[in-house]
Image (tube, rainbow over all chains, first blue to last red; front, side, top):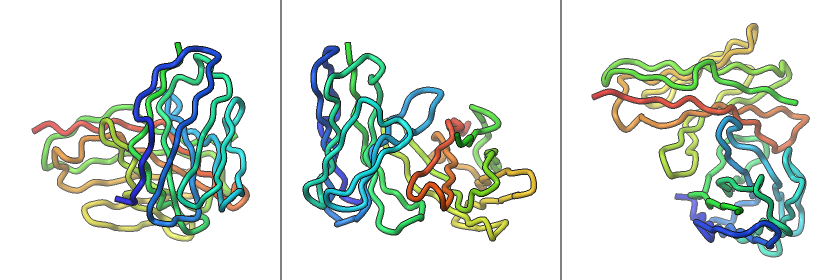
Length: 113
Length: 113
C-alpha cells in the first residue's frame, strides 16, 4: 500500500461541466501520474508531475489540465467534460526516475452523459 | 507512436499449470520493461521488471524473458493459482520518453480450479 487515495471513486456528470479528480499520497513520492484506462487501449498517460508545480503532458493530454501545489496532491481537471472522457482514471506515484515501480491508486470511474 | 501489444487477449489455464503471457514491442530503443497485474476493480500492481541488457529475470513464481532480436517479452507464472486470475500488462520505457511508460492493452488470465 503506497498510501494513495483517489477521490471521488465514482462520478456521473453531464457534458460541458467541469470535473476535478484528486489524487492524494502519504509517502512523499516525487513523481505522480494520471492515466486513463479504456477497453482496447490499455493505460494511457494524460499528464505527470516530477515535483511541486512541475508538470508535463502525456500522450492524451488534450482536454485535461493538472496542478500540483503540494507534494501530496495531484489534481486532474476536465474544464468541460465530454462523453469521450468517460473512462476509469488512475493515479500513480513513483520515486526513482526511469523505474517501473509505479504504485497505482484504486481508480476513479467517470461517466459523462 | 509506441506499440506495445499482447499476442492474445485472453488465456485460460488449469490450476497448478504454468502460464505464459506474451508481449511484443516495436521500439528497438526500448530499454526497460515492466509487467503489471490488475485484479478486477483495482489498480495495476508491479510484478517484475527487466532492463534491456538482460534476457531473463526471476522473481517469486514469475520469470520474465526478453528477446531483443524479435522484440518479444514474456511473463511465465509457475504453478498458477486462482489468485493469479487477473489482467496482465506489459509496459516499456525508453530514455527519450523520460518518465513516460507505454502500456499494452493487457491479457486476461483465468485460472480454472
